[in-house]
Amino acid sequence: AIQMTQSPSSLSASVGDRVTITCRASQGIRNDLGWYQQKPGKAPKLLIFAASSLQSGVPSRFSGSGSGTDFTLTIGSLQPEDFATYYCLQDYSYPRTFGQGTKVEIK
Amino acid sequence: QVQLQQWGAGLLKPSETLSLTCAVYGGSFSGYYWGWIRQPPGKGLEWIGEINYTGSTNYNPSLKSRVTMSLDTSKNQFSLNLSSVTAADTAVYYCARSYYTSGSYYNALGYWGQGTLVTVSS
Image 1: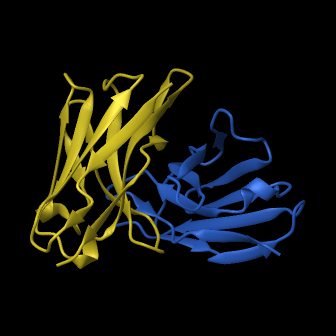
Image 2: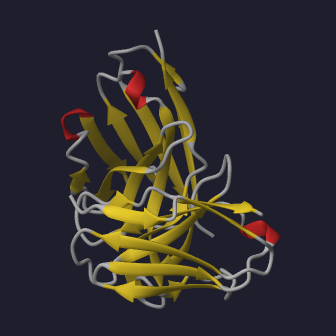
């Protein structure tokens, strides 16, 4: 199975900060990666698919980049509603595998 | 607007079978993958497996011997069975659907059910 190593596991940031989260795959996965946001008690929500495509309705401050083994989720200017846990998920091969998650907390 | 609504027993005893169903509103089965994901309390997400619109399945090897997925297109539902549960299977279980936009299908999980907490305890 492909391992997804996500970092950092948590971070503290202020409203307006630029935030970057990374995921590294144990082998190349082309651009078959999605980023998900999860708030407490809620189902995950798809933000980015195919590594860099923004899902409809997701604010443009979210962006994704990368291909092969290294991927990045960037929040351009952190908003109060962005405090949540973020996960990457590779959908290149089976079994699908998630990163461990990054909890974004208020500084 | 696509909605997934899931249900099933929330409390099981060890060795029993977990059964969950997910109903699909506002969309068809054709072309999509229908998945199950779980999340133990306070932990990360684990992919359990998926079934596509033809009924073809892919399961996580860590659970494969105990998992069965099925779909009922006449009822717009798909289901998960997990046999011989233990306390380690205690988790919130989610159903999900793959994504479609601008004329293309993607494997990303674009729609999710609300989640069902399943607790295994004697």
